Image (cartoon, rainbow, N blue to C red):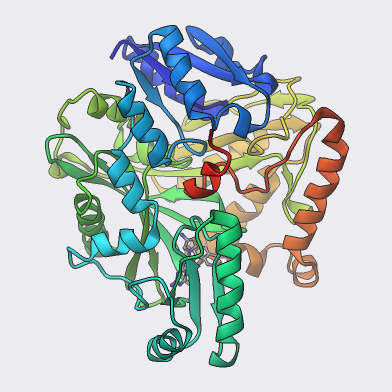
Length: 495
Ligand code: MV4
């Protein structure tokens, strides 16, 4: 591999190029009209313009990416996260063009891109799964029978959905049919696929995921877990590794299950197996993400590995240079996603210029960002400014470092999630490790959040922003847009 084209932007494009440079591999950036001045463009050895700001006319157009490879002689593509990263149609296109995709095969991507086929594949092994229907619901009375068997509350999920989109909790059989119809039409319009299924609703889970790596020689290992329970609107804000709730025994069991899930599709590359853990510490497999994830740095810090380098080596055909027994957890890492959002107003996106922008430094602090002072946060893409990651010998030290780093981080001109990070780091439930996916709604700004309909407020804000930006022909995506694995939705824009 001599030259890698990074089909992405922002912090992840920079992060990927850094590893490529260290390996002596040349880099190619692609950029839209909105990213002419972006750091990833300046950092790369070469850069190719690929079209207008809206992603469906630039970063999501597979043919333009492949054409940019032809123009520059790049032999491989790293898709980062979001955009084309989990699109099996694109993965096949890359393969057919004789190029290397730094990621799994189109087949593995396609199976894991659908929650039902993912669960069906995992059935080959003894993987704990939430009781529910194994196939898409086609018959209402049959579905009602299954729902009663499973027991209420149940959850209706879209098979093509990802990251919590298209989920509906149903408390009682009397509203099952109408909820089911709503779920189907929602899934149809969001993903172009109306297939839905049901699961027993695990009401207060922790969201824990396991990082895996598979090579082309049949070796698959896991790199332990990330705790991802601190989220709002199904978008993670704080992640950490390891999770303070897992005993070594559960960790080993979960790790083995994650490896088996990956093995069920002969997985190659970096991937993440997602689980929920209930109050009895029983865990259940939910889905697999077939990309490098936003929060991968916490795993890098506790394992000492560079996940992008591992991805590149795997894609070059190298065997993993370590086995499961070689891997150990060292210390503790926490990531705070610094979004251009106002936590005081239901995390609504905040637009503007980074009037002041100074990052924290020093021992145990890593900042992955894609902006400089004076830059504007484009409205076209995900509003994440940076990832602030701290590392310590213990969780206590990592938390103390995070608080110190938040205090040093100087951002003006835009509201950010930095203060929210401080709130979490100082909260007794977080410090004690006694929290679940309801942390934000339970503890953060309860008065305001109980009264307001955050979803409606978000949509209203986006409508207003779009109105403001109309003269520039901008279309703002409804966040979270960047990281979801619903390639079907992206496919609508794909071409
Ligand atoms: C669940 C669940 C409870 N029970 N499935 C959310 C993201 C997607 N990957 C799957 N998710 C969940 N699936 C069952 N059977 C809880 C979640 C979930 C969640 C649900 C509501 C509010 C916030 C959540 C955060 C993480 C996971």
